[in-house]
Length: 241
Image (cartoon, rainbow, N blue to C red; front, side, top):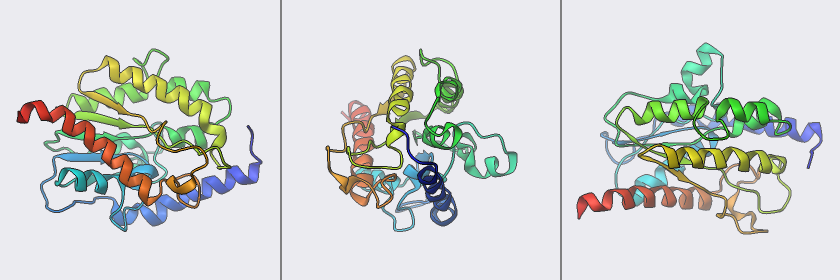
């Protein structure tokens, strides 16, 4: 499904506004104390609701009862070539901050599809991010590099539209293709876990999206964080027992 150009432009404005008004105020969020072992990186999905302390990372922190450092930036991409703004976090890889991280919660790729190719004829862009077998590209390079720091990685997928109109409805097929490859990557690399949100939004239920029908609502942020926390708990449970 193709959307009129002015609607795509409106979607881009929404994402641009996120970078300006949402994430600057919450570039680094530490919950409860100042010694986090969990780092969050990504785009506006990860950053959304940060000012009100209701972002995905806050939900993870609440579920686990420990701090999470969130360095996600609205509008950030996997592939981003401008050096100055890239170093400020518009390139997701540049959001990494050295530390003794046990876990890195990560998302990304959606803005590359929407802003990089308009979610139309995106095969070349997807292949640059990750190959069909999940082994090559910027995402495997990023994930493997982060894993080699000693951290375990949780890569979070994107919300799907509920079957009603959304500015990113035309991104569904490319998003499915991208995430299928990331899921393969998680099967290949040890200590990498993929959290799909493909089944999170019931058909016809708009309550999982903000009014822009792109970003997560408060409920969605909470439930996404719960899914991430469940992965961390499940992996760490044998160590406790």
